[in-house]
Amino acid sequence: MSRDYQTQTPIAARVVEFIQESDAIFTLRLQLEDAAERARYQFMPGQFNMLYLFGVGEVPISIVSDPLDDDIIDHTVRVVGRVTRGLAQLKKGDRLGLRGPFGHGWPLALARDKDLLIVTGGLGCAPVVSAINYALKRPEHYRKLSIVQGVKHANDLIWQHRYDDWREREGVEVLLAADEAGPAWPFHVGRITELLDHVTTAYDNCVVMICGPEGLMQRAAELLLEKGVPPYSIYLSMERNMQCAVGHCGHCQLGADFICKDGPVFVYPDIRERLLQEGV
Ligand SMILES: Cc1cc2nc3c(=O)[nH]c(=O)nc-3n(C[C@H](O)[C@H](O)[C@H](O)COP(=O)(O)OP(=O)(O)OC[C@H]3O[C@@H](n4cnc5c(N)ncnc54)[C@H](O)[C@@H]3O)c2cc1C
Ligand code: FES
Image 1 (tube, rainbow, N blue to C red):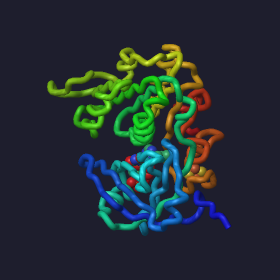
Image 2 (cartoon, rainbow, N blue to C red):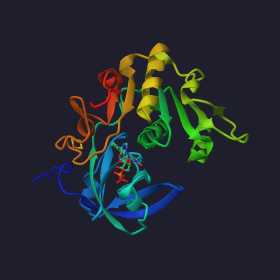
Image 3 (spheres, helix red, strand yellow):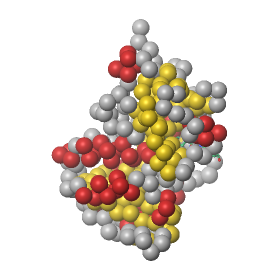
Image 4 (spheres, rainbow, N blue to C red):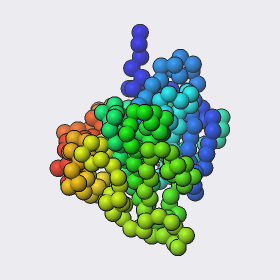
């Protein structure tokens, strides 16, 4: 009998590598222990897993690997509280539980043969990393890839080498901004939304994927509408505290939708009115 992998108790995964990306950010490279589970596990960029630290708790974390990579599933995590602090103590060989993948990912098929514009703010760029990796590995699918990343302080930027590498690729444009930066920062100083005036994407024939604080996502989406991006070409990835991840507990409710099951990726017009309303 087939199992419903998305609702059952977590399955065992093992840490095959732990990478410290910065003081508070680390990448967990996980492999499911059971060979049959490894064979059935499939995901799309933008989906997430529930990672369960035994005896501590469970948290939603985006998958940042490429779907066609080997059977190692990567998660990049920022330490904010109890569970993520515990995950940060894991070492190679340690075990944890994993449920997933959950939710709807990015519309990468819709973006095919168009320009792809990725806008990401703060440290919350994990949900778009696998979309970036996906597009970079399939350059023939997209006309142009523009990556716009903003951080509060220049020191917050992790993966500088990745941005340098991406910038060198044909058909890829990378624009970086920091609200505050020292003289050594060679990129824009100011708001990420200011960079949108400098992007060379074809606004009338692109798909946009935005991730970051909700205020930033809304400002970026409104600006892009003004620039002529069709409303149904703008997608956002939303975050809320989660428990069940399958639309039962109500923790992640956003109006009539559950972010775990109807999102986390939403098309902008569907959530525009609700985005910054309090109490939805
Ligand atoms: C779909 C989805 C994908 C995510 N992907 C990633 C990822 O790839 N990498 C990553 O580092 N984090 C990601 N997160 C956020 C991550 O799930 C939370 O940081 C984590 O649940 C915090 O758990 P904790 O026990 O460490 O902290 P807690 O002790 O639960 O919380 C510490 C503080 O953070 C706040 N907080 C907790 N969760 C969230 C949240 N989701 N949004 C806003 N504030 C929150 C709490 O209110 C509290 O103030 C994602 C969240 C969602 C919903
Ligand atoms: S986490 Fe339970 S309804 Fe979404």
